[in-house]
Length: 339
Picture: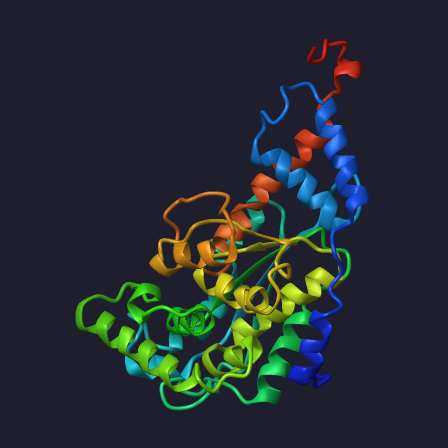
């Protein structure tokens, strides 16, 4: 992984310095919306998204010329308990598939002209089995977060964040239960397709992990260290870096939203620059969205991960920008405005 080595206290300190919304840019966007040739509010969330982009890009008009998708891949020690329908070796195999251009996210990035970067995170060394030990040490967690932060390069207009890691819906369910409470069965779903006894084993693993670590966790970042994973920590770091760099973020499904939710649990405004792209078919996702007060852009029954839903949402953002910037105003079109 990458230097410089951070520590979790440095990460906590950064949280206090996240920039707020640029109200000047947001107001300019809202004022233009009021002048466009349409009834007020008639483009619904497209109008909201254009204003949101301006507010968090700190510029008007908003742009979406350089969208970027980041996928972080890591392995989980808890996968050895049979919590997934696939073996842990699939993580590395899918990374190769990404590299070869054969995955769903490759096709979506190509369709919407988004850059794609995939980051492997110590695939040969899974995190600790969260049922019996913390997933990561403090330094390991901080390094993973710093790695995710450094992946947010200058010049990106918007960021789609996703993951690949066999066992990560188990870690995400445990992390959500640790952060927000609730029984394991409320957060734990089929993931890659487990059912019956395998699903019961997955729920038992989540329940045992939360019982072990929730009482001992100091704060949400310590909960991430104990119950998360390297790729989840990297996503948390990327969300923070995007805020610092004025880059709006599209979150993908259950796992990436769970990683971002660590920041919400620490500061309810820390995800104001984020929008959840889609409602995952993973049942814990709806419950999580209620907790973090997010309304997904669409519900297509997707549950693939790998930033597929977030990348698909670039199409919606591009539509929002095109309408906002390209439509005529009432004055330009010679159309009578509302009386």
